[in-house]
Image 1: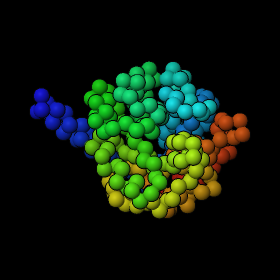
Image 2 (image 1 turned 180 degrees about the vertical axis):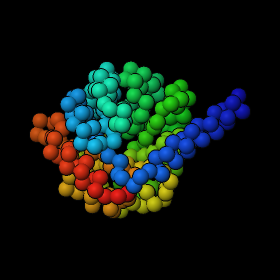
Image 3 (image 1 turned 120 degrees about the vertical axis):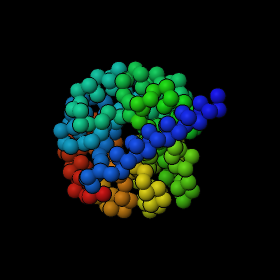
Image 4 (image 1 turned 135 degrees about the vertical axis):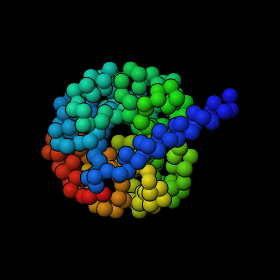
Length: 247
């Protein structure tokens, strides 16, 4: 049994390393993900504007209007061009529930914001072999730099995000964290893809990229209009500004 577990772990580590290599050795153009998509026209807006990925929040764990059902996420993802990656973003931390969300939505790239442990992620990946996994890192202090260590062998990359310590909200906070801390994390793990998130908008994304030098950027609230849906000018401008900076 021990030998079988070790073999699975080695195979998983190799598959992740292969995926990391394909992420890290890219053209130098910033990877842009537009998150919090709730309707098809916003997904298509992001795609047409040049986004590389769009995120659908599935599996509600806190009060937010951005969550959608797995079936709606699947429906919106089907309309995307093949060049745009559909990402299931969830705060769920239970393996069985995450697995069900993945199977119900049909999305095979997930972004985990809940406090799930590395062993659970390994189990999840053994059940869904073609899964690509990004794990959030809550950037709050210098100690945050150690957090990725536990997950490096079971995920494909990380999302450097802010947390609202007053409300406990993680993701979609609209809060900017200390970019120097994120830069330290990116420097510490030079061959790992990191997406920078947290309070990004069209006005600050270029400065953020230059400060942190991430693989990509991830935005939600910075591209919203007053009605909570995506604002076309903000979305287009955010993508344009991010793509202007070579990583």
